[in-house]
Length: 269
Image 1 (tube, helix red, strand yellow):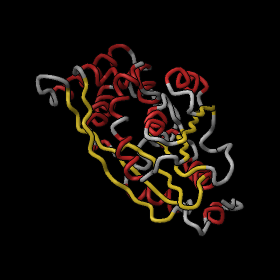
Image 2: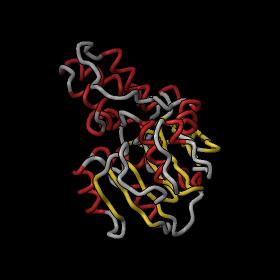
Image 3: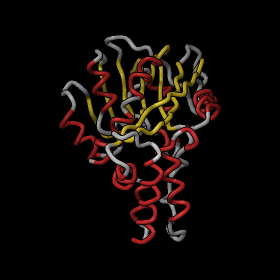
Image 4: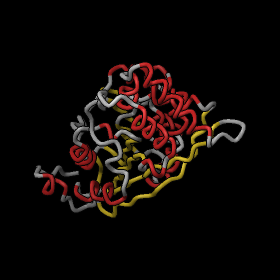
């Protein structure tokens, strides 16, 4: 799949950073939400965690079962309605899943309830396009050459938590103590100039959707513009695109305030 071969190596770069910020220990019970192909779940298992993982897509869970160790408990599950007991986990992770949720505040409250006191929740999101040429090249090409009758499919704002205050506020409002954020610089290596276009065309849902809906002439112009933009990062080998993402982490404190802030009954640990 295009996502695995093109986006996968990029998103996996965040996993070590996420784990360092979460400061987990062997034997910790970890839940990976929106696990996708299971990159985080697999790495956590290899490092000694007791891992559960969920994804809302039945097809994605079926695919993950084919490649992940059998000890990882996989199930279809909704981030906004976690079907786990309160206080079940030491750590909860979500790697680039937050921006796909209709109600991210509900998902963060659910994560809070599912953590033990002292448990940590960490999630990652992309920084805005000005920090990530891989995004800015493609989005600018669509804006300049795309057919304006083709609209972006419905969905939440992709860079909603691309500013530090937004992510910190999301954690604070759910009751997490000492929320923190770290901006991580990445390098996206692609095999060719055209691979950047292909990554978005074949490997993304919303941006890919707007590309696939373009009339052929407009799509060809977008492709050429993307290739020209990628050419600026051609060093004579793989294309090397600077990218950036945020890692946000919060801890569940002993004083449970999340239920009051969310208008819900607080769950004991």
